[in-house]
Image (cartoon, rainbow, N blue to C red; front, side, top):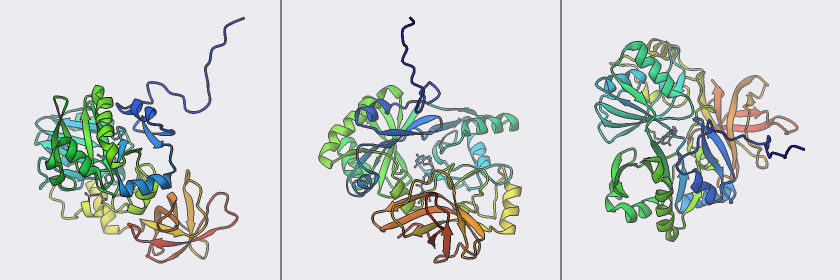
Length: 379
Ligand code: THG
């Protein structure tokens, strides 16, 4: 009889296409309980503690997050500045070396392609630190088609986030006091094992923190271990982007709140779309039309007071009190601080007004659930 081969087919099947990060072996060692997939790579979703415990810990101590899924798209060459400016409606005229900019990338219809953080290394060298869509291919297509003199690749760079109010204490102890002087959305350089690394004051939380853009996959475990060891006295814990903190802060997620079908004007990025554009960019004509027409829906917060809601794995429809569909919730969670459920989603005019009553269709709920529209961030 043939020998039995253990080929388990249930769960998520791992292969080269589900990319590991330099920190994946560390999160496994430190008790990761599950992953999501972003940019074809593994993003830790939970450790041993509940998301509520992680939330309170994030607000009071320091956490180390494997956010290697925030892949970099590197733009280099004589036309790099011109090309990056052509990719976004946000003016980069005042952007200096050492700045990070949160920018919308839009397509020819004004739809959101991605919402990356842009880092400027020099006039001829940029990184786009991307959310979950294939910007590498979009950028290559644009550059080839429009004959920009740039080279575009995914470099060997892997963000590791150190988040929480004690992040500055930990990192200044490890790398030097100058860490305290790095301002929000600026980056500087640190030395690690003979290499020079980029560190920015940024991250996918509103609890202060930094992101080290580790260059060199093989240094991952050692960087993690160093920060872990030095972090013990600051009560460091392994973590991941926290759903409660993210929704309270109104930080949007590409693929959930933001898609190709939404414009920057609908997802809180209108401040990066000054209509007196002096530069040319993909989607300019379409964006101008959308600006002239005015938007009819916007991302808003929704509060609803029922026992902790299930995870929002598919959009939940939102209705007006007279049962007309007027939007959807795409992320939701129970906030232990607000002591209610909070959600994010597109809401139509005029229901988008702060304080409007909405009815939400939540799976398993016996009837429509009453909720209230709220401004972001949640207070
Ligand atoms: N850090 C890095 N890359 C990333 C993310 C990150 N790429 C993917 C994803 N996150 C991109 N999305 C966001 C969303 C919000 C912010 C950053 C990246 C953010 N916004 C601030 C705010 O909304 O207040 C500041 C925006 C601004 O400049 O005004 O921090 O987290 N490296």
